[in-house]
Length: 157
Image (cartoon, rainbow, N blue to C red; front, side, top):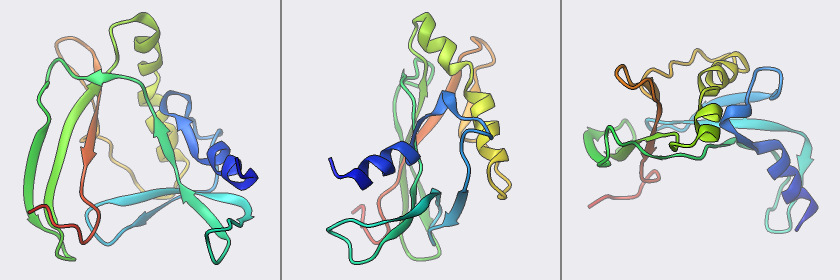
């Protein structure tokens, strides 16, 4: 594996339950011109890759979590919200993901609220996770909303 690619993995892929404000630095959010934001992390120094013309200074942050589609809301839903300000269709597919039933999974998921707070502390953008993270009022099971949206300029017709 290219040494720089390993650096990208080391700096940009984290398990969501392990995040806290002191573990990740140099984070920033950028609005992509549509309805979403890109969560990125700056590298300690610019990285060069054979396939790119210029060095890169940051990369998207990838947060991983292991779970299953929620038993509370089992069917992924497609929602249409019209077009955004750059003319992309407002179609996205969303579903809730929750911990598996085993103790290890539930333990790891128990730290996600604190991890999201850590993400919020590590950036200067005011974040609101109320539509992303929820705890079921009846069962107490935490859930994360997973959303897929087509790339800018990609028609869903």
